[in-house]
Length: 556
Image (cartoon, rainbow, N blue to C red; front, side, top):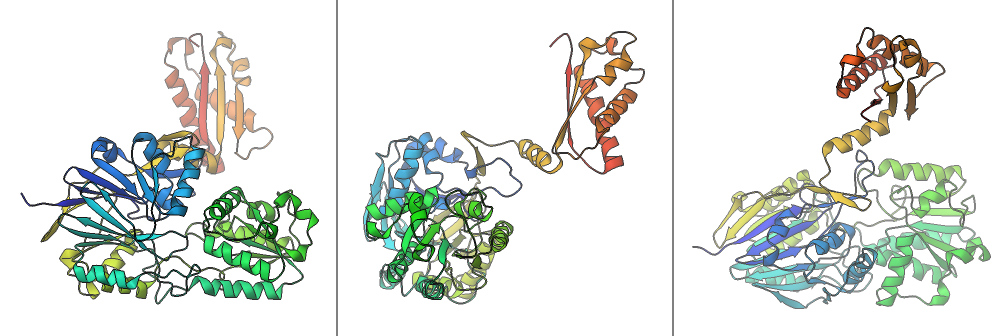
């Protein structure tokens, strides 16, 4: 039988986020990344979403380890849940990536004994796999490409990347090493596709620094408030350096911003003097024009530091005309409305606001078209699978690969749960595996019933009405008093004086002639109430609240 390896796609396919891929050869499996994603607007109450790992749990004895490309949430966010299910897995990543994992493990009360730090250029062996970590430029320190040797060929996983020729840390991608891999022969390339729709080259992070320098110089008499991703250490380093240049103190605000800044400082990824930093509690002692607040909230998250400042709900910082606020980030698709709400609120408070649409205050960490083409040209894979993107991104990346000479039959566009089987001279689709979303709701995780989400959305959009009937108070000839005392409780539903009495009359008419003594099925009574009120309210008021009858009788 011909030797083969199998790729199993458990997340990050047809979506941005929740990245998780398994590679299997013989009795060995390695996992590439273990990410999460954030809920959309129609998932009320859900904190975040992680991949379904049923396939991994059923093959736990084969798994040799987890290899992380970098430390963003969409690549490490589900790791604590994976480790809770399979506690003995070793995990490998660069210094900042592992530091972020340690913080997550601490929050989840998980021992971090299995976390292992590697550096760019290191090679590790996991079963039949030999894995090389290659420096990648991205929007977080410690990002890596992965060159994975198997007994039947090389797999190259790009991870998230861009080609930044003037990186903040001075460490460029080793293009020579990538070309060397391509010349040796790469059997399969898994390539990220996030920015395949953006033409040209991505902007260097140093351009952002130049824009911020201009903002510092033009606002010498104002306090600066800069919102950015807490994990963007390169951006934060530039802000600190500019603060020193313009004689300002730096104030970190937002739990994740403070935690990650401290963590990055301890491991040497972020450099500053302690005298350059002021605690948020002491900001009142600093002159406005001598401070810069670095905070979370560039995505308009409701509980973030910047959002609370914009609504006046942040007791330590009051925003006003003496403030220049910079949103040094680009809205994640779906967050645009929340971001613009924050911008509008800040303007109402009298602050000046700068965001990406006005200045070059953000640079993407993901490759544009010309960089994607360069990667394909350097690696020259025999087979190509686009990953890390919505389905249209994957399709467009596959078309790009064809334009660069990779035969259509050597390209596979996967979906979540897809498997691909590859041998030396053939790539074919394998049987699908169970995959999908596991919802995290507080401390509860599970494959949430779609009806639960529909109910939550229904409640959020239309409110609800509770009808309470106590059959214990019903006696022959007392129907008039009985229906007059039915409780009508509304929440999140627009009512008016007399609404409850109107609903009681509707219910009374619905049960005209109904013999309660002969009906021992409470469900029948509830159904009559639901159908009657739903139809009446929709026809008269064009509203559709959730109707929840509660019927009490002697059995209760």
